[in-house]
Image (cartoon, rainbow, N blue to C red; front, top):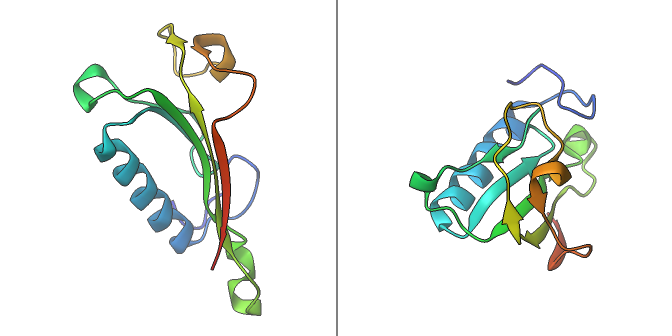
Length: 115
């Protein structure tokens, strides 16, 4: 929610919330992703079988540097992609991502796009 803090303690701007919703909805509808980890969400987003569970875990900051928009400096989007090898469903939403997902030690790809 705009005006609150994200998991890293940064104040969330309205544009942070909107960009996060766009990323989550786009990745969810792709059918390629089974888990998403966003700087804007406290917990990982785990897609159920009915959500077209895919083979990838995507970690992202949808709008890095949003607090600098008024200063006119560059902002961007950061994300990394991991292939999920296996998954053990967690018993609660409060879990460590590595405890339940078998992810390779290196990610498949990482990107930073400047705007």
